[in-house]
Each structure stands twice: as C-alpha cells, then as structure tokens.
Image 1 (cartoon, rainbow, N blue to C red):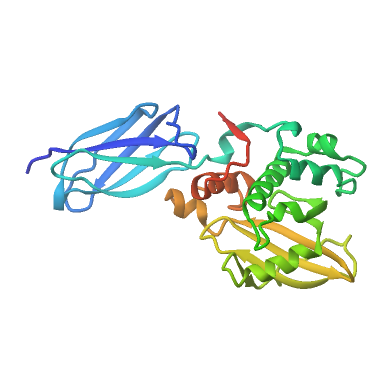
Image 2 (cartoon, rainbow, N blue to C red; image 1 turned 90 degrees about the vertical axis):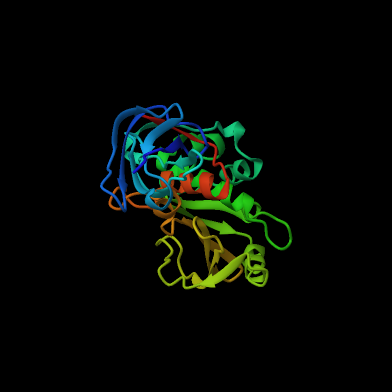
Length: 294
C-alpha cells in the first residue's frame, strides 16, 4: 500500500508566532499499523512529515509535546492529492514561565489608569494609588487586573459604554477576580443587556463578598454569552452603594481551544496566565503582557 501522504505542520503560539524550540511528535494511524515518531524537531520552521498513508487509510492521531507549552492531541486526515497543511496553536505551560513583561502604567488604557488612581483602599496595598499601586502588585494580581480590564473594555453595554468605564474603585484583588465599587448604572445596564443576548442571568450563589463588605445583599449575577472566557459580574447592594465581584471564567477553554491532553494543567485552569491565552486566541483580546519562557 502506497505511503505518499504528506502532513505539513505549523506550530504556533496564541499570537500566531512559530514556536522557538524543538518538539517531539508521534503519530498513530487509526486503521493500519503505522506509528511514526519524530524526536527533537525544530518547530521554528514548517515541519514536513512524509511517507504517510492517505485518503480513507490516512487518519492519524497526532501527539505533539513542546517543552514550554501544553502537549496536544489532534486527529488529522491526510489527503491523497495534496500536502495537508495545518496550523497547530499551543497554550503556554505556566510552569515554564520564568518572568512576565508588563506594560508600563503610562501605557495602560485611560479607564484603568483612572480606576487605579481612585483606589487608595485595596486590601494589602492601602494608601497606594495610580502608578505606585500598579507597581506594587505581584505578577499574578497584575495579570488578573489586565485580563479583566481588557475584557471589560471590550464588553460594551446597550448605552455603548464599556463595562470598564463604570468601575469606580477596587477594594480587593485576586488573581482571577477583583471586588470593586461600581456605578449603579452598571447593574441596570447589565440587566438590560440580557435582552440583547450580551449577558445571561446565572446563579451567583457561589460568589461571596469578603468580610470588609458588611450588610451588602446579593442582587443578581450575569455572565457574557461566550463559549470560553466569560466575563461574570455578581452584584451586591447596600442602599445606593453597589459592589461587584468581577471575574473571567475559563469554562474549560484551555482544553477545548488547544486540544490539550488531559491532566497536563499546572494549577487552576482559572489561573490568570491561562485566561490570557484564552483571551488572545479565542477572543482576539490582548491584555498587553508577554511571557518569557524557560
């Protein structure tokens, strides 16, 4: 049986840039006993795999394992008459990140600069505002803020205002979320956006305010209608004061978008670095920071 099939692989990161490292590749034909293995292949160039079965007998399970990215598992049908060319996107393995390059405070969008300037009471960073607050944040919190800022800037309400513009001041920062005082208008506009399909009302019973917010009552939780990387806003009211728990949900995005092998995650799927990869690849939203890999 002729083995004239060819598979052309372009291994890229979420920005479409070719991986700058060497990888191991193994293929398993689903119909025949043919399991080629390629070791230490240069991923900075297009990878051509030849002598494959093709057509009806050309279905292969492809495993690719780069050192600094999550390994993936895909099925490919090698065509008979032409070289099968496929881009393979990879998500960074966060355990291989040695440092992160963040934008300067001056390079942040003005809405986020305003929020940070108006936030003198962030838990653990009291009396710091603006650039001093931004600089004092650890990498995980800073990444989380930038993820949420980018997503909320892109989420425009029925009055054409971005969600980000209606956040007043942040009171507590975590890697996957923050708690902030927001304009009452935000809650009303989000509720109104349910009718347009931008948000869905969801169960917010698992979202709880930190102890510093006394006597606030839950008044609804809403999530954007994204398949992965949903923005969720859970509101709490006390009189005319409105607080929101703002987070981005992974919803299994790393595994589905990148076809990552199971049990290859480092830490929680909602880690801000994983959210970064989902936002860039799936929603074309760039939070503005870059990973430096080992």
